[in-house]
Amino acid sequence: RQIDGAVYFEKEFQDQGNSDRNMHLGTCFHRAIKQIAADGVVHWPSERIVSMYDGWKGQLRESGMVATAAELNELQRAVENTLNDKCGQWLLANRSMLQVETAFDYRLIANGQIKRSVIDLTFFEDGIRWVVDYKYTHPSTGETLTSFITSMKQLYSDQLYHYASLFREFEKNTVRCGLYMPRLPLFIEISSE
Image (tube, rainbow, N blue to C red; front, side, top):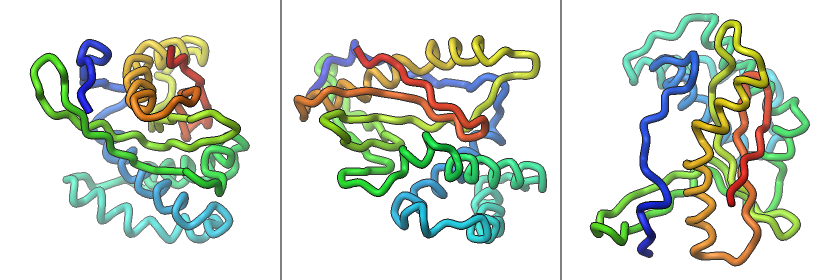
């Protein structure tokens, strides 16, 4: 499909208080969530999450990073937060049409350039298409939760609007969007209109 490129300008987002290290840790988190979604939450007790340490170390080494014990513990905590949080459980609930890392290829009308967007999590529930983006981030030191939420909405609303518009090209359903921060844990709904 071709879409109007004016809807979304690709940006390189830098999460507040985050670094390349957190980006790599976030990639490990995404992979873990993808596996958990495929297997089902009930098949992921805490012991199984701990068993992922060596796999995470290997993934991080491949990206040029030697993770500290504190970083691996935080990664484990983020996964456990997601599995223990009511909203995290809702996001990963066993339902039809749950898709993790859904890729959309599209062509820009303006110049014919082909682009790809990868959506972390999407599902259909009660007539609503949900589009969720995971962010392995947290408030900066001294930042209030209210300020953090406002900042996240400002940083990512264009990205989620773009994702919603991709689905609107193929479906007539209502689309709702949100960010999920597993380190807190926190879900922030963001307008897709």
